[in-house]
Every structure is written in C-alpha cells, then in structure tokens.
Image (cartoon, rainbow, N blue to C red):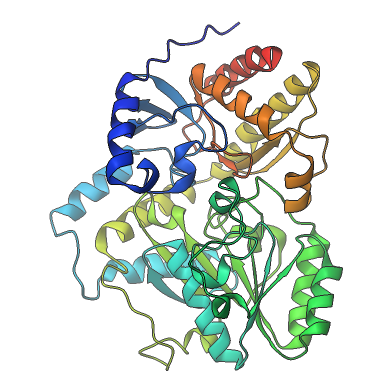
Amino acid sequence: MVASQSLKTTESQRILEEARHIMPGGVSSPVRAFKSVGGGAVVFDSVSGSKAVDVDGNEYIDYIGSWGPAIVGAAHPEVNAALTEALKKGTSFGAPSALENQLAKMVIDAVPSVEMVRFVNSGTEACMSVVRVMRAFTGREKILKFAGCYHGHADMYLVQAGSGVLTLGLPDSPGVPKSSTETTLVATYNDLESVRKQFENNKGEIAGVILEPVVGNSGFIPPTKEFLAGLREITEKEGTLLCFDEVMTGFRIAYSGAQGYFGIKPDISTFGKVIGGGLPVGAYGGRKDIMSMVAPAGPVYQAGTLSGNPLAMTAGIKTLEILSRPGSYEYLDRITGRLVAGLVEIGKECGHAVCGGHISGMFGLFFCEGPVTCFEDVADNCDFDKFGRFHRGMLENGIYLAPSQYEAGFTGLQHSEEDVDRTLRAARKVMQGL
C-alpha cells in the first residue's frame, strides 16, 4: 500500500484566491483550474526530470510534462546549458538567426511531408495560419474538421472543439460570430462515411481537411490506418489539402511524427510543443509549392515579432538532438506501455469499467468499457465523476495526471521504472476506494 502524502495546499489556495481577482478564473489557461475534476488546483513551484514540486512542498510524478513539450524531462541539464549560453547573446533578435535554419533543417529532415517551414509562437498561431494558406492555395473557403479535435482558439475552429472547451461545457464559445464558423464543417473521427457526406454536400468547396492524426484533446484516441488512408484518398480525389495538426504528436509518438508512424503523407502540417523544448513555439510546414504562398515569397500575409526567437530555437534544437539518440522512442513506448497496461489491469481487478491505450510517450485512460474511437464515445459513455475522484486520489498520493477526461497524458525519457511502480501502487489504492 502507498500511504497518502500529506497534501498541504495552504499556499496554493492563497495564490489561487489572489489570482481569481486579477486573472479570469485565476488561471492563464482554462483546464488548469481543475473545473472538470473538482477540488482545488495546486500551484507549481518547480519541475525537474519527471517530477514537479508545488508551492507547499508537495512532490508529484508529473504526467503532463507541460502538456507535452517536456519529452526529454523537465529542466533537462543539456537543454538548460544550451539556453544559458544562448541567453548571453540576447533573448530576442527581431531579425534572422542561423538557429532558425538549423531547427528548420532538422524538422525537414525528420518529417516526410515537410519541404519548407515557417516558425510562429504557438500551436494556435500555426493552425490559424494554415487555414489562410489552404484557402489561398485552393481558392476555396470551407474547412473540414472533426468533433473533439482542438486546433487552438481561433474563431473558425471553435465548433465542436475538444480539450478545454469541452471541459468547461462550451461546445461553441460566445464572442465567435456566425460568419467565422459558417465555413467550418464537422465530421466524426474514424468515420469515413461522415467525411464522404460532407464532400458530397459541399462539392468543390472544401479547401482543406485538418485533424489531429492521434487525438489528444478528447482523451487519447488513435486513428485506424484505414481512416487516415481514406482521408488521403478522398482529399487527393477532391483537390483538397490534407493537414495533420501535429502540435501534440510531432516528435512525440515518433521522430517523424504521426505521418511517419502511420505512413500517411499530408500536404501541410502544424507543429509546436516538443520543437520548442519547453519554450513558446509553433510552426507550420509542407510542400514547397504550398508554403511558397506565404509572404514574403507569396501573397499570403503572416508575421510575428517573436517568431523564431533564439531561445525557443535553441531549446528545440537540443531537444531534437536528444530525441534522435538511439533507443529514445523504444524506451518511451516500453515505459508508457507498462504504465497503461498496469492502470487498466488494476482498474478491472478493482471492478471498474476502464480502457486505455498509448503510442510511444502519449497515453490515455477512460472510465468506460470501450472501445473509444471518437469524441462521442467519450462524451456518451465515460464516467466523468469517477474520473474526477480518481484524479483527486492520485493527486493526494503524489501523482499529477491531466485534470480532465478529455486530455491525453504524456511520459518522458526521465520517467523511470520506479516512477511507474509508484504510480501503479498509488492507482491500486485509489481504485480500491472509488
């Protein structure tokens, strides 16, 4: 049995109470408020390796890793050392830097579909930008997305979006005009027939199809190979661009991203998280003829003061260097597979309906029988109340999981076998008491 650590949260509560008066909801991103799992959130003070420490001194095994970027471990000494040297040269140039070339070449060499890259500052910015490019390239206006897939908070995407929007019970956000979403079409993930129907009803009008090649914003939902192959076939036939939103999956489920892992080549892709090594970053890239539409090479305008800043480029370069070392993804797959298999086995032994899965260092656990193939399966079948109690119990036993049934979890190279052992011991105690 694992004894529950004494979860003193006095300082976290004080800071969050103050924050509620000066920031909306007391947070800078909605899911951090623990709205969907109940109980008070905790305020982090430091992170290192696979661990996080809050302002009250409680230590946790961290399975969010800054929501994905900390794949080599938080505050990795090699990344920090590279950043320390880069800081001596300045934090922002607002001018071209050789570091941009270096990271761009690493992305191009790794990802099958990418021939040119544009760096931006966030995944949201990257996803917002590709819509403009897809529309300009095709001369069409409509975009097809999938229910439960989240592509940032730009107006055109906040239609049946995933993650924080779902957590707060806001399938559509107030403040988004109808004119911004009337050209956004929605289909069901892993359901090619729903895609075909949208193309039949909007013949010759769809500029692009965008999706998370592995869903991480409705929980962890992998695609079928047939689904991705079918999307590629349909879009090629219809003259529509296919965009993989690899902000979450890029360099996480494989060095070549989801497109390399599944062997499906999109026309254009978005990236973020891992390629910045923990610093704010985003990117989009694809075929040269498409990317040549972007200013100043072409007429599609997009700009950003801090885009390609030297610190984010430095952290990304070092992170990708570490990930490219032999055995990295094999280790991630082994450690994550053991974690998820153990959680599912313990849940079932304790009499709960549970299912889960993983690819490399990305995973999910659902409180339902499964299988889970799309957002509707999560929304209609999962026990959200039980997940909330499980989340709180794990937190009180020193395990920090994503605070929403609609979020994937992440492991990193610095998660150890002992971390998994501790997690599974805690899970057995918590599951027995649910």
